[in-house]
Amino acid sequence: MSFAERPPRWERFTSAVARALDYAFGCRHKRLSRVFTIASRTYKVCCDCGADFDYSLKKMEMEHRPAMNPLLELLRTRHT
Image (cartoon, rainbow, N blue to C red; front, top):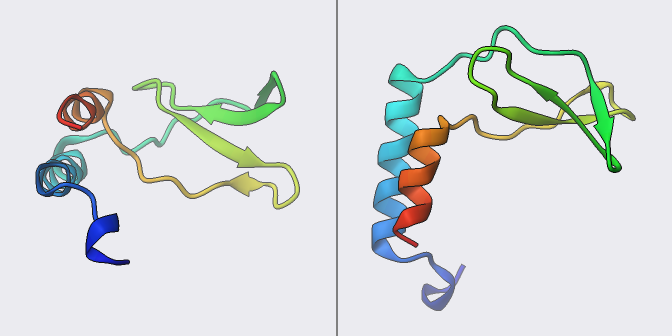
C-alpha cells in the first residue's frame, strides 16, 4: 500500500481504539439467530446486540467480519 492509499491518521487511530474497546467491553455474539436470506443477502443476527454477519451457503459458515459495537462503529464513521 502506498502512502497516498493509506487512510487518514485520525481514522487509523479511532479504528484501533474502537477495536480495543470493542474487544474489552463489546458483545461476544454467543446467541445467534438462524440463517436469513432476504433480498439476495444471507446472514445471521446476534440476539443480544443486533449485529449482523454474512453467511456463506456454499461453505455453510459465517463469513469473517470483525465484530464492532454499533456505538463504536458510529464513532469511527463520524470522523471520516
